[in-house]
Length: 240
Image (cartoon, rainbow, N blue to C red):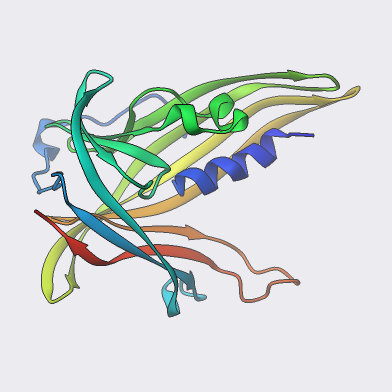
């Protein structure tokens, strides 16, 4: 049986990404950095486990590569198509003076994915808000003895800016978190319970490179006492 709690884990995995709709918009917060999008741009993301301080540890376990293969108009925006999903199960990226946007390849999602993720542009990063809604999706599932009603809301919240040396270059990295909230009810047979679950993930965007890292914290268990989470971070890259 599918449960909202299980689907929340699917959402966390797919997006590696407060239920309030309030935002803190201020023109003085308008940021300006280069988020490069061009055909031929390529990023290699190395995968690491995290240590108890939530820092990458050990050697990279594997590498994922993502390349911009096409420029097109997609869902009303000038967009760039990726040959492989980048960090958020995203296949299309777009940027304007307000925000960086991403769109999944909706037709390729599983039935669970189509139920729980929006077929619309997701606001991945806002240039002029400290906190913003990334997406919101109403949930309705009725499968025999399993019924679920609720909402998934993902909110972005800025953490700050720091400078980091990346492949010999000292660059500004803009850090933020995504807060995914699942609320609602689920009924299994004649038992109904309230759902209120939250998961937070962390991201960094490097000036003139693009998305630099994605980090998901975890907690040790008796079965896995060394488990602290994972991180994807750019190693090699090519910017046209």
